[in-house]
Picture 1 (cartoon, rainbow, N blue to C red):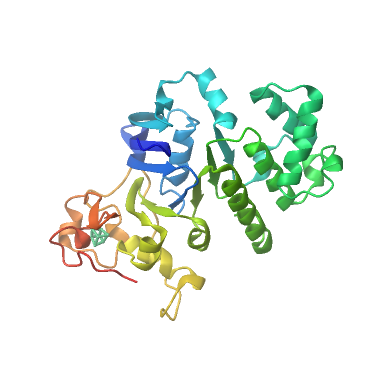
Picture 2: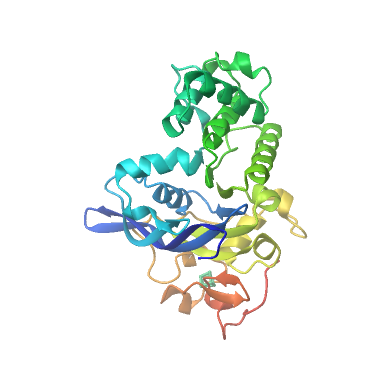
Length: 333
Ligand code: SF4
């Protein structure tokens, strides 16, 4: 472990045993995040990105379970922790923000009650100290009149304000790692930018590591340091943001980029990726992307390619880009 490494996920496998089959929702996923760094997990729904986050927090619903690999926070395995210990880790060392703020907020409690409860659950503080801290946190996340807003109920706030409150709750204990799962998807574009800029400012101040889960490559281009593209429960491309977005290797990443209007360079029309992600219990035998890949050939149907270096520090799971493959060290963009 390097001195600044916050999270290390190694060969993580989260499976769901079903009748006569196994759904491999997360299948041998490895990555790490350093202090102050943002790693984006990108992919369509069903790619395994949210299940990776749920696995890190150990909130995988039964019958799903982590069947292999390890998750270490600052060098200590989270898989060794009891449920009680994990409950302390969540909210204390790992903060979480989800797409829909109402899922994180209790509709029958005031904002102040929820924030003070969170603060007092994880830190020793008197009621008065917790209220002062709650007001300070609301101020930090850009809510004006925080001394009045603590008396409001969630439904009295706009979607953007509710997400700011959720961020205030997530950072209340100054977590080492913040997991943000589609944090702005439910918000309009202007508010999206405000929320992402707020997260970036808080990250700088607190030197937090952020795992950003998103299907939006626009957000990735703006806010991520490193990117991992997931498909079929596996990482198919991983490198720095610049390499993934401008020296794209994997045909799936190429498809994601082509289907995003603002990221197209010379492509004159939007090209959506044909077909849908296969269910996690029915992946094809060879490359999992083969049924949708415009470059698929016979060899792709035989074996699932390994995730291998296509260039220095640029991992790709595609036979075209493996050592000796026809496109080794060539890019799509
Ligand atoms: Fe496409 Fe074949 Fe590469 Fe899979 S291995 S992404 S099917 S070219």
